[in-house]
Amino acid sequence: MAFRFGQPASVPPGLLYFRCRLDEQRRNWLDPEGAFEAELKKLTLTNLYNARPRWLDNAHKRLDAAVFAAYGWPADLPDEEILKNLLSLNRERSEA
Image (cartoon, rainbow, N blue to C red; front, top):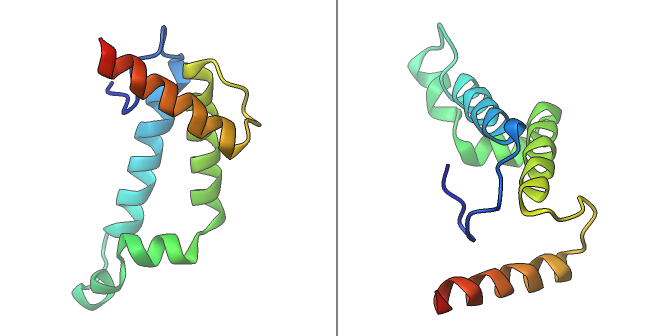
């Protein structure tokens, strides 16, 4: 599994599952069985994220929590701290 901001010390078992589950749910929404071409043209990622159904929010929350755990960060970390941590990781990578 690739991490955009450096490989964490260990990957929690649920991380891959939640990533794959989100991908599977989005694919099922984008290409439902038996849908006609006219319907499929309306089923875009933009429309999905604009509609933001509850299942999508829940899937992202679970994935976010797993990513935070992978980096050893608390799930309620403020955005400013997330950015500081990411900058620090980026600097470490560039020096390696």
